[in-house]
Image 1 (spheres, helix red, strand yellow):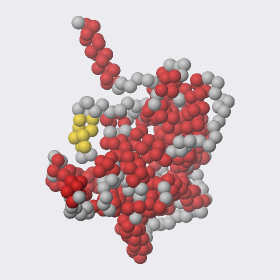
Image 2 (tube, rainbow, N blue to C red):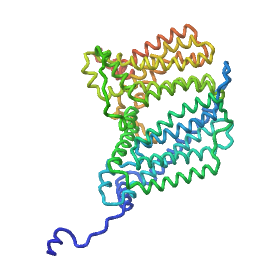
Image 3 (cartoon, rainbow, N blue to C red):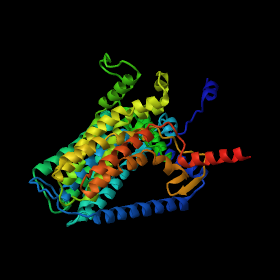
Length: 526
C-alpha cells in the first residue's frame, strides 16, 4: 500500500510558495528576457518626468499670457477664475472615479489572469502592485492638473496647499473606486463619476447665478489635508485587506479593458480607446423595442439608426449639453473673458460635442456590414450619415454663438453665422470616424513613448483638419468680434467644402495621391 502511495505522489510535499515570492519570480524572469535593464528604466522615467514638466510649464505660461479684457455688455451675474477652478476640481474627481471604475481599478491582464488566478496562493499579494499602481497614477494625474491650475490662476496665495490637497483627494478618489469594485459592481463607480461630472456644470451655473467670486484658488488647510490623507491611507489599507474578495471574473474583465485601452493608446487609435472605456458598461439588451414607423427607405433607416444610437447614450447627450454651455461660462467669467479664450472655448468644446455625435459612424467603421447591405453607394451612405451630426451640431452652434451674440449685443448676425457654420462640424465628425489606422509597416520614429509610425500625426489630424477649414470663418468672427455679410458668404462656402471633404470615401492622403499621379504620368511618358 505504501508503494502505491509513493507512486501516486511523494510522501512529503513542499509548502505552497507565498504570493510575494511568485510575483518576484515572475518579475525576475521578465527582467531576464528583457533587452533593457535598470539604466533603460531610469532613462524612460527621466524622459517622462522631463516631458511632463515641460508640458506643465508651457501650459502655465500659455494660460498666463492670454489677453483678458472686460466684456462690453455688463452683467449682474458673474464668477471668478478661481471659482471655476473649484468647479474643475469637482470635474477632476468625477473623471478619476469614472475612469478608475471603467478600468477596474484592480484587474489582471491576460498573462496574469492565466497564470496567477488559478494558483492556490493568497490573491492579495498578487494584486497589490496593480492596486498601488492605479492609486499612484490617480495621485500623480491630480497633482499635475492642480499644479497647472494653481500656478496659472492669478492671485493664488497658497498654491502648495492646493496642489497637495488635490493630489491627496485624487488618491482617495481612486481608493473609493477600488472599494466600490470590491463591494458592488464597477458600474456604481462609473455612475458616481458621471454624476460628479454632471454636477460640475450645475455648480458652475450656480456660481455664476450666485455671483460667487473667490479671490484665490481654493486651498485646503493643512489639517484638512491631514484628514484627507488619513482617509486615503485608511481606505488603501481596507482595499488591500479586501483584494482577495474580488471575483476572478471581475479581475479578468478589468484586465481586458485595461489591456484594450493600453493597446489603443500605443496604436494611437482614439476610437478603440472610446470603445474600451464605454462598451464594457453599455446595456446590451433593451426592455422594449420601437416600431420604427419613420423608416421608409435606406436614408431614413440610417438617420433613425444614428438618432437612436445618440439618444440611447446618456453620456454623449450630457457631453453635448455641457459643452454647449462652455462659451457662455467663459463669457460669465470677467477674469477669463477675451476673444482668444472665447475662440479656444468654441473650438475645443465644439470638438468634444462633435465626437459625441459621431458614435454611430464609429460603429459603422468598425462593423461596415450593415452599410454594405443597404441599396446605396458608399458616398451616398456617408452623406446620409451627415444628417444627424449636422442637425445636432447646428443646434449646438446656435447656443454657443448665440451667447456670443448676446455678449456683443447684436445676436441676429451671430445666429445667422451659427446656422451656416453648424453643419461643418458634421464633416469633421465623419472624417474622424472613418479615418484609417496608422501604417505600422512604414518607417518608425523613436519617441520617449515608444516607436511611432511616421504618418501617425497625419492620421490623427483627420477630422480636426476639416474642423479648422470649415470653422475658420466663424473663428475669425469670434476673434474679430463682428460678423460682416461677406464673412457669411465665406462661411457658407467653407461649410460646403467641409461637408464634401468629410463625406469623401478617399482614404489616401493628398501627398499619396500626388505621388501616384506623378508615377502614372512617368509611366505614360515611357
